[in-house]
Image (cartoon, rainbow, N blue to C red; front, side, top):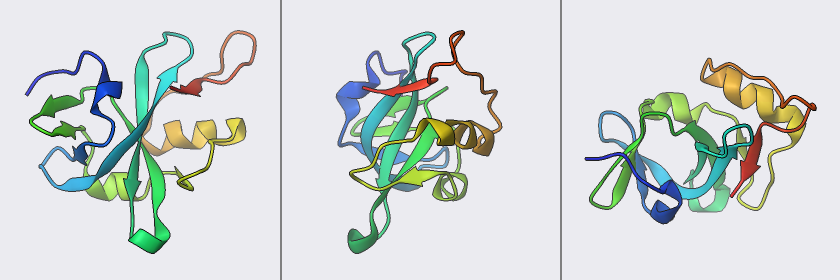
Amino acid sequence: MFEAGDIREWRGHDVVDRDGHKIGTLESVYVDTVTDQAFFATVTMGLPTRRRLAFVPLGGATVGPGYVKVTYSKDVVKKAPAIDTDGELPATEEPAVFAHYELDYATGAGGERRLARR
């Protein structure tokens, strides 16, 4: 396994937890607007009639043959804030995504959003 140079190239691949259990499929990447680095991914999960996109941090993520491995367990990701498969993350809900994973949250210097979908 190795750290991905550009995680966006892995869209559509399986996302697995630290123990190798499949969580879902990598849908999109959200970058930190302060650093322009990939920070969160949305993972398609759920039953075919009830799909949703759950947020998972990409810090420490690695890639292997056909998958992206994140550092959080499947159970933690399943309980993470999520959006509909055609939804957008409202700015007012950004803090909850960070809080779920016990990550520090602060808006940009001008009060702008912290996450941007790429």
